Amino acid sequence: MMAEETKGWDRHGMAARAAQELRDGTYVNLGIGIPTLVSNYIPKGISVTLQSENGMLGMGPFPYEGEEDPDLINAGKQTITELPQTAYFDSAQSFAMIRGGKIAMAILGAMEVAENGDLANWMIPGKLVKGMGGAMDLVAGVGRVVVVMDHTSKHGESKVLKACTLPLTGKGVVDRIITNLGVLDVGHKGLHIVELAPGVTEEELRAATEATIVG
Amino acid sequence: MNKVYPSAAAALDGLLHDGMLIASGGFGLCGIPELLIAAIRDAGTKNLTVASNNAGVDGFGLGVLLETRQVKKMISSYVGENAEFMRQYLSGELELEFNPQGTLAERMRAGGAGIPGFYTATGVGTVIAEGKEHHDFDGKTYILERGIVADLSIVKAWKADPSGNLVFRKTARNFNVPAATCGKTCVVEVEEIVPLGSLDPDAIHLPGIYVHRIVTGKHEKRIEQRTVRKRENA
Image 1 (spheres, each protein chain N blue to C red):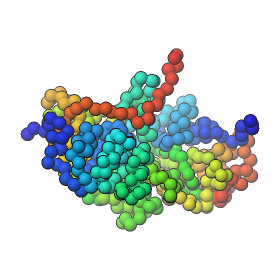
Image 2 (cartoon, chains in turn cyan, green):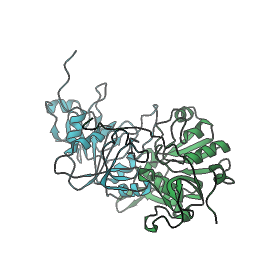
Image 3 (cartoon, rainbow over the protein chains, first blue to last red):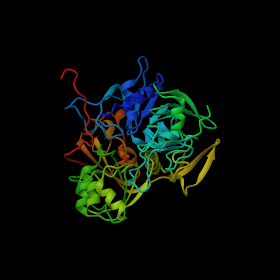
Image 4 (cartoon, chains in turn brown, purple):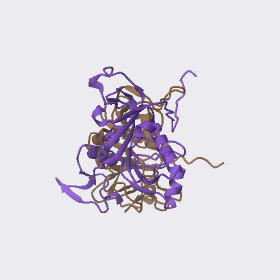
């Protein structure tokens, strides 16, 4: 068996790095996939309230076996639990707080991100189309959008692009990109390197990035 | 005036017609009007347009109306859990209008509130914005989305009193509130009908003015993604 690739962050490493973005006292929406793992790495001393766009603030962990409640699910339709500060509301209210800018940050997965902050994460033409769910509302409404994804596709092609090739979820909406190779910010004329993942060189990050890196 | 009906079929009597627009509550399989969906299947009403966040799964929820080919068009934000839906959609038998989830909820809320359209930044610069009126407010671009007024709303609540005041439970509230308000007629199924005066008037989630007919019955309340954690001392 080949040795495991240890360079950079794995899914859990990316989630842990994304958790460093959380600010105390804020309301945050976590997307499906790696972003869901972020809740396992909330730093000590930081208190955030997780919003689930199907109508809940104050999302708790998965229930113990036998305590699942069909009336209590997250946006990924998984059974979850409530917390002492939990509040429930309807879908119109839920998206009013998203659209109204009350949610400080969304951490979302992506298929492609472009250097101007364009995000594509809902549709691959010609393949099964499942729908955008609440992603378009979130990226248009929340204060800050952090994307967590692998830097390249399975075929080694960069997912951090000059321009997205897939249908967009939002135009110019991404603020920060966290990948297995490092952290990049979307600036006025291109991307800025914020941080390199452990063992990754700047040359390696640049080589894996199609987008313009300006600093 | 009596709003309580003995069965879902009785509660829908005289309200169904081919080609109608139905707004349905529910998110995934959580808080779906499963009794009313079954009664619509039994009634055989055809060419339905259904505005609902999701389309159920194979064999449950709105999936049962897809199996019987009663649905002509869905207005939804996410339909990924239903193989029969995909088959009908890809073969051109079923129309699909994707709405962003918040836009769909607000279209229902607006329709029920007498607001024919509203501007939103959601979808600007995407395929959702194509063909829609764009307008700038304070230097930011928005698109015009239309309110939905449905011929019929079908929703699920936890408890109702005989006047139609509703209380929902946990995340099963979801689209039920906006869907209930946007129908010309609203039929509600509940787990329990409680006596007048037993609900706290300060804790009513949806007042009975929006509710025309009520039915109660046994709900399956199927779980779509059962996820659990281990007990620390197991």
